[in-house]
Image 1 (cartoon, one colour):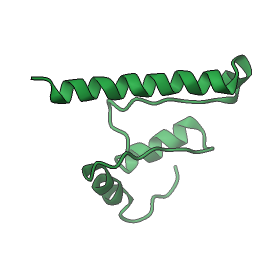
Image 2: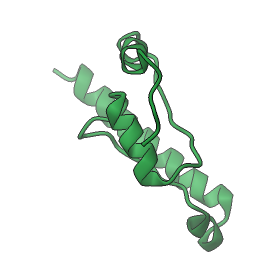
Image 3: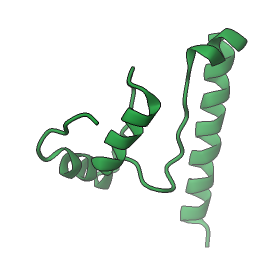
Length: 87
């Protein structure tokens, strides 16, 4: 697993508390990236992971893959907004 910089978890937590969305883009293996993100508290048990692989791009055009991912993110964000402000 990658060595985390001192205070990485605290910094990410502060960004999230400030309402800043933090995204991960890496060339590491999924397992390595996920372990690092869990260690610095960027990922939690309910974190939705969207994985883009070269295999997926070979099966579909990059445009179609990204379009599907964006719909998933918007759908997920929309449900959070409705749940947060319903009542």
